[in-house]
Length: 335
Ligand SMILES: NC(=O)C1=CN([C@@H]2O[C@H](COP(=O)(O)OP(=O)(O)OC[C@H]3O[C@@H](n4cnc5c(N)ncnc54)[C@H](O)[C@@H]3O)[C@@H](O)[C@H]2O)C=CC1
Ligand SMILES: O=C([O-])CC(=O)C(=O)O
Image 1 (cartoon, helix red, strand yellow):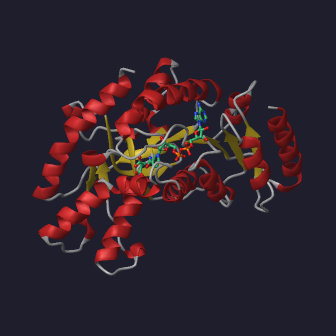
Image 2 (tube, rainbow, N blue to C red; image 1 turned 180 degrees about the vertical axis):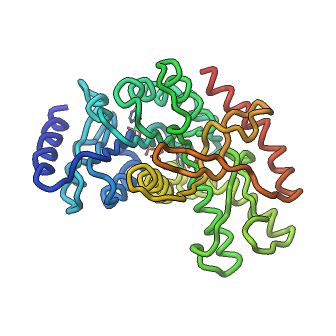
Image 3 (tube, protein in one colour; image 1 turned 180 degrees about the horizontal axis):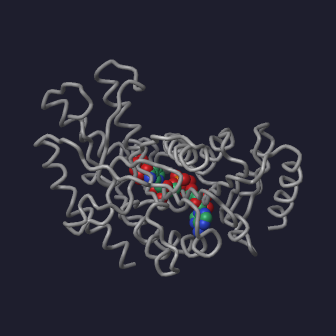
């Protein structure tokens, strides 16, 4: 904590002369981790961020000191679990990005992380409800299908839940889908947009390849759908016990955070991103959270799109996703 305080004071002093008004304080919780560090680096480059506030239970002073030397126009502060670290990190935050919690090892499902990560996320939610009740909260911690409902319940209990400001980050599925499709079609991924709906684990991840404007054989559809649904496993296997996707997740998380910032403080119109939010799309089937394309505006998730036209193949994927999704959501809500 001593080191954290020193870093904090140092960074704050330096920032005084360089940074604009503290309009967009962005807090990263879990900032010293595999995702947290590269994500914080990418956020340090984001011109919308005026104050980058890094919180972790370990090692944040070092990460904050390191990032604070980068000559972009934001101040960096580091906070640890000791004393009022979390409160300081969250106070007045406009956006809070949360990659705190344990990652998978080979052989585990994301749901296997529930026991450890549910309490971590719940604790952070209670703190956010108290110290930054108006912040936009971006949940990366797995299992996203359950951690978003856990967070929502904690905010509801504190009387500060606004469904427009709570987002499960599913951007990595979209990033992967674009890359994988581009690979087999010999295209530049920037020209390949794939909408991915549902949740963020296995069969709950539903790519809508029929909406890409490209043609696929049945074999291509099967292979791509499987790869997009289980892309996370490829990385878990390759990392061989040392963790799951961190760099691609940091890239995806920074992209989503930037979209939220552009829409909420950057005045940009027509920002549309897929994200796992409280959603009416399958609420009649008891599935209260779902990821579809969402239009972001000054208040956050302002317009939730439906699925659009989907193929029979995709309808079957949706039918398989809904029961699993409902189970994951209920588990989170009841935690
Ligand atoms: N939504 C998505 O698409 C993805 C989600 N993930 C998930 O993100 C999470 C983090 O993954 P990694 O960064 O690889 O793990 P990591 O273990 O490298 O980092 C996690 C960090 O969280 C910190 N932490 C633990 N408890 C905390 C608490 N109470 N408050 C603040 N920080 C705390 C740890 O000290 C550590 O620095 C995992 O749950 C993983 O499954 C990973 C990839 C993609
Ligand atoms: O696979 C994991 O556990 C991490 C993750 O969510 C992903 O890479 O999509």
